[in-house]
Image (cartoon, rainbow, N blue to C red; front, side, top):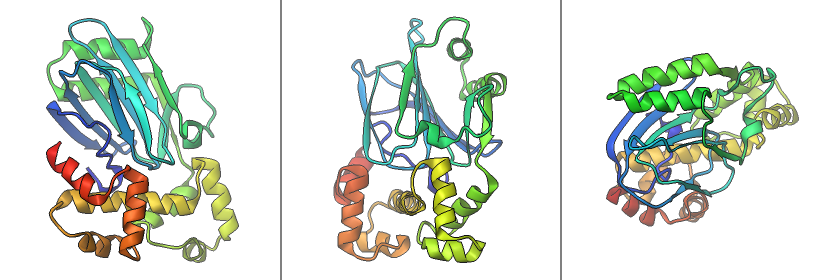
Length: 267
């Protein structure tokens, strides 16, 4: 999994039969699945980020299933997910989105921002057929193949305009530690123009995007070696001081770095 697709609070429950993979074509996707014996609904926490999430919950013992489409969130958000025996989950990169066929060509991630859609697939729908096929195969590899066929048959991948991905690439290269004025200088744009085109695609500011990417890299640093001191994380991720680091960490996760690390080690 790359630094920029981390969402460690997506499920705070023990995971059985966990599988994961990273896909880079045509869309950047982190795909993972697991089974659960939890009988009650699950509350998941979503860290602010520019990424969309799909969660497919389904049972093999009966036909119960639910499809969750979760847009990027701009603040720490909790979502109730029904209890299922199996979960197949996809976290999408921010260079485009999958939408239903025949949507306008300018349907961008902003259309999903801070929204959660959940539905039980109707019979004869592509989603219903996908979940039924998941029940019949034994391997993660087979479910990946079925999911890719589902995307090709029923969805359109709409790319973010290249002038916007140029901006996001620069921000990721600098791990979120770059000013908008420097980006404008590099590209020959005005700061106002950058803000306008960025907001029209994502629905949040370029400055906020920098914060999201910086925090994704912070999580990557922590998860790669959670036994280090906060000062070491800060040195590698660009926070100006301890108070800034602590404040932003609590805002994004709802807990202190110490509390997060303890939970991460125990999950």
